[in-house]
Length: 277
Image 1: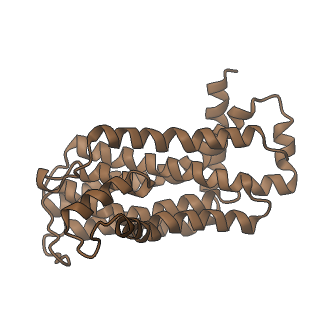
Image 2: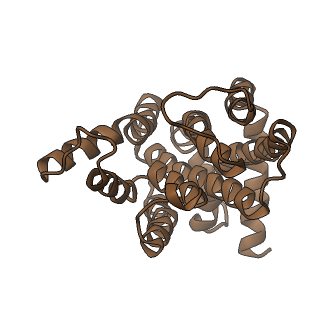
């Protein structure tokens, strides 16, 4: 059996087990409420949005819904994967798995794709459903390229969080530590990153008191390259009308996307190879 076939089979097995768990029974309604629910609301022509936010088309709806994806799907990865490594390690199951005639790298990738697929598959399904809601509400057929980028970038975001969460789970010696590491990472990038950006901008002499300040906007976009959430939103923002597109160079955005895809995964694989059950 080839290495790729082994990884695929083990990943599908992980997905089948985890997607039937009580966690997904709780997470499922949350995803339905946040993803199709937010799209339905933003696509409603009668919706009044706060501030100067206007909906110019399907791409704007997808961009606005990204906030609700960040609040639900990424947290779902944390909830699904926080004990993916730590629990088998404590119960002795991991020692049995590592004793099998399978490469550690293949086993690590199976865990990673298993956690990722458990959340990414339902989310992608809900996103496809949401495209139909956009058509229903706005009588607009979403651009295939915009739709593909929305779904693929969301899948990438969940992959980044899965690699971060499994790294945390492999470092934890108990379930409490694993939950703490995962939730702390999620809180840092989801809620605290803007505060960090403002503090650093102020220290560097950039006026952060005015959110419309062009200098601060440019600084914030460059700072977002170092956050998975920021990169995700910059990718979606690049599909908006020209006046609303980010100022970061596309090459920088591509490099940041590649960095978040490969660096956390490489660190996780290295950590797993040296893991002692």
